[in-house]
Image 1 (spheres, rainbow, N blue to C red):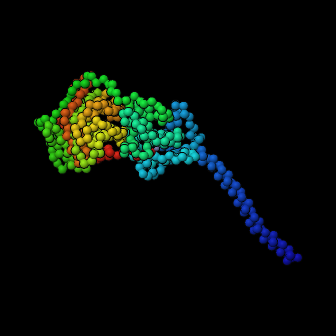
Image 2 (image 1 turned 60 degrees about the vertical axis):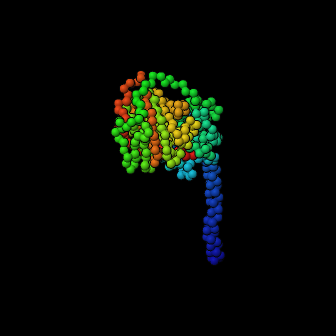
Image 3 (image 1 turned 45 degrees about the vertical axis):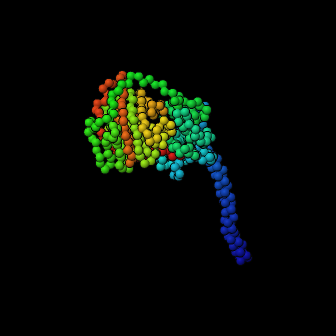
Length: 412
Ligand SMILES: [Zn+2]
């Protein structure tokens, strides 16, 4: 009995672990159940997850705001969206994944490098709006152009068109059009894109003319290992002998910035047809950084921008550009707008970014290139100040710039 009792006890005791063993599947079932619940809940959460990295929040909110103004309401915090940093490859600035919810990746390195430039806010908005255009508006890429050569849409991207960079002049009067177009593809062509020039240019009087017909007032003819400057057949000749572009601050001004017309005949000989040459104006104390440029190349392309920005605003092909020949480049500054002309044909207009009151004039010579200048003149609106130019041709300041003005905006 004792034994039998013991044996019973043993079995009972032996059953203890068995019981414990038996409870394990129960626990397992419970755990599985909980896991399934979690999976179910998280699956629901996933589809409506809203996870937007702090640096992108403002632009996502602006997108919702701009949408609401145009009758498109979003509630992304509830419907879901993921915007996160990534290390994107193949010259990609952003990527939109058609997942639930939409997931957008922004290239960290690109974001960081535009953050350090003057136009960062608009460039970031352009990038986020483009990706949200894919994800929230179902828009694909659109690579057509307006009459003036501007991209028609901020949805430009994908397969390159004639190797044109994706730089888009997303600023000033253009911004509102591009946001309209984003939410409504059939937005009519904007006024800025027409090639009709209807700005009053009366009242401009010549303040300075440089014909370079003699070198009497050319004090600093020089020839060193970096560059040489001389008079060559009644033209100013500047040669860069090194791997840097030169920005040459040629004409000094006084402390005002009136409306003006700045023009010169310019010719360039350089190794690559893509090398840019052109005219510039900017503040003398920060001439190498805060300077407006208008450049062309011997491949028939024009560029415009301000050096404080990440890159040129856009690249446009213009048939008026004489490849390898002499081109007359002209900028008219009127109030805050700049009007660009090539060989007396109006080609483009855009806002000036330059701030401050003092402006100097100069030109760009590409790395290892030669530029000839002739018939340089500055006209100033007589309503502003008749004694505008204080110093003339005998005071050069040379600034050496790396050729980073050639960089362009990556794909989106
Ligand atoms: Zn895209």
